[in-house]
View 1 (cartoon, rainbow, N blue to C red):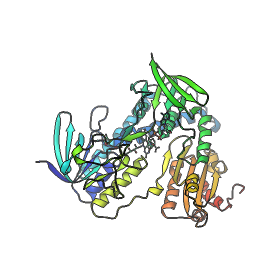
View 2: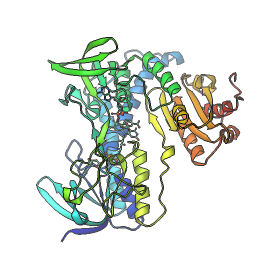
View 3: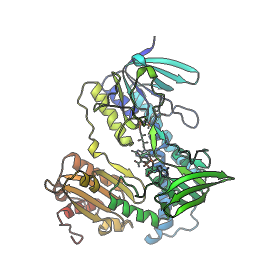
View 4: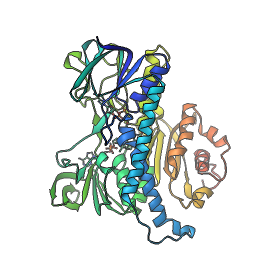
Length: 473
Ligand code: FAD
Ligand code: NAD
């Protein structure tokens, strides 16, 4: 007789583990199945995000940022350092410790919430039974409700097949044992920029080959232009409009051939990261007899209440449509738990913050000007450079800007776009404002502490009405 639960969640990433915790809080008997292990083979909940995504990448970005400041900015403060060097093994050990602390924390939360954590690969069978396979062992559990939160995996491309040594994906890029002298990156998206930044700051020559002609097309073009200028100044060699045609490993080198507007080109690098997007992890998530509907790209089809076409089976996170972001998945996890227990459930997909943790950071929420133009929505913009704030000057980071887009008539804030220091933290004010349906006038009337970076947000709001104080309007 299979164990029975009110809810079984497949996947313990930020969508799945959060869904499981909220289900348990709401009084439902809950199990969470996950197949991930750490390097020692121990079950390791937390999904891509905690194990090989958000957290380890930010740990390395922070280490590399300290090294960058030490080499390039401390001198301006009068701090002279000689003989600085990077010990990659220590940097990696710090990152691994952070990961194991946090994944261990999920384990604790499962225990505290009386969630049954089943290690193994889950596969949905007809009648809401789930087969859980771990090595040779197979068991079955049954659930009234199933939440699929199986996440995503890197897309691979035939022109640069991974050997997981010289040609690697984002997981490999988090595990390098030394700073490569020359690093190639295919794809100048979020992962390419973040991982390229880590290794560039540590001294690698980094070349990014991006297929699109536009840089970071999802971001506001003014912000993307500003960021591109900064990245180029840091020595990130970003080549746009490149079609990679083939790659070849010879000895300990990787040769990459690509075409751009000038014709056929070639680079030789010591390591090559392939970061061309991610695809849903849904290939074998359900037996064919279940008839789970997926779209042509493998994303599980869901309605507005995260319901799949199979009764009492829901799906959330990277496995379904929308931004592939941890916080988007977590909010869906909470919402689906509320929905299952009969409560009101809602996620505002219009205000999901995006952050790219480069130097400077890039962050945005809401619409870009281009989207508003396409939708024929009249708007006004206000921009303010960090260089005109005392705090950014004091920090020796006077780069970037805040741009606020507000409706021309109602003045409601429709989008906020930031490139600059701590953009990742500043965007929170914009998200609160937009969630509260605030106008740019509302932000302009809020007292912002001085001297802070948030004054750039205040001044950008004033600039919408052409009354910024610390710049000519
Ligand atoms: P996942 O985190 O992928 O978790 C799904 C889990 O389910 C995995 O552990 C998987 O092994 C398991 N699983 C899959 N199928 C089965 C099965 N059949 N049985 C059992 N278990 C199964 N997002 C951000 O918001 N901020 C960031 O800074 C950020 N940085 C990132 C950096 C990198 C390098 C990468 C790769 C991603 C980053 N992301 C970031 C994206 C973020 O990691 C994902 O959006 C997020 O992890 C998705 O959560 P999820 O729960 O849907 O899936
Ligand atoms: P991405 O979609 O951000 O970027 C992929 C880039 O590769 C795009 O610019 C695309 O045009 C380019 N590309 C695609 N095929 C190519 C090819 N054959 N040759 C050259 N360029 C090619 O994807 P990613 O960087 O792999 O990251 C995957 C997802 O993970 C992100 O979209 C994001 O949702 C998530 N993520 C988020 C964060 C964050 O929030 N800070 C960080 C890392 C990853």
